[in-house]
Image (cartoon, rainbow, N blue to C red; front, side, top):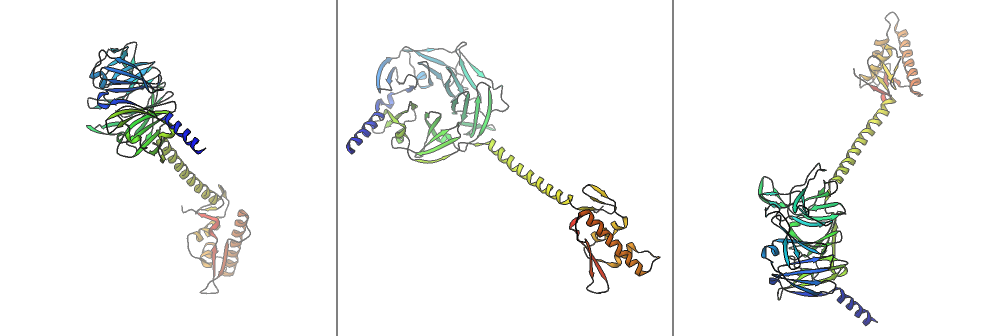
Length: 452
């Protein structure tokens, strides 16, 4: 039973892991995989070999009439509806392969203004983005108009902000959005100085509007693009044993260890992923031959290392700042409200009047002076200090003492009635220095004294 299972596993592995020898690297000018037709085009100078990817065998050999080094090496290949187009990397030239010869389509010229721009297909239209030329970088999209045979610009008319110009950018298309990240930009104050671009942007082709998603700390200039994998891109670190799977739509990147066959990847030719199978170009170090080898998804990925966000979103920063601001405002408001509630239940005392809960209290002027006497002193009040306010010179000392006591009792009564409490707020005791002298104290917890 174990032998049968092992045989099935080996057979399955052989079905998915197949290879075809394309010959020595020195003889291969260019390769291109047509994902729609599942065909590989291998250019050998003045000849073209077409290989069926489902069978991994050559199905036709074509002798090219007017192939040249410029067309083969200086052009990027794209395909639409089974037709191969060759886009000039230094300028606006556009050729197509018709039968066995290259036919020029454009009315443009080699302007050298879109060097290392990103060329791609969307809805049967050839686009390019960015590029370098004349000490400056492009930050816009152009497309090839088959009616005028000219390159036309897509004006970002719906935008309030624009990205910096870049070259070598990665373009990921999802529905009507073009995601742009990676590549290089230049120092505007020193146009000969290049550095990696950390901005991550999205351009909506219908609205013609840019929006910045955030910034990435990953330097894509230190790695090469291996394969587009569904909605993701897979990169290989140049000087590392790791690969990186980038999912820009979901703001994620996952790092894996390279497998043994990924160590042999030949980055000069673009590998592809089609219907669950990776079609990878490998180099055989012993003879410098190039192999096209297939791997299933299970075979392709090595050991998982880590997952992290691709970019830091400014929106998240704004949300965090907004939350912090809200918390600060809430705390201030809470403390103010708490302070207001405390003060709302206190009697406000000034030199001229009393108020309680925003209403004036009809308090005797003499009584207010006595309360202010307490508030203007941090110590207990002597009986004689109160007597100086209430004393009637026409009355004797005993009569004035009774008058003072009556006034204190009346103040206590009015305050207790106002606050609806039972304890007197003004109390007295005998002095520690002289037991014949009374000293008075006011419970100030129920008051807010205003110095005006």
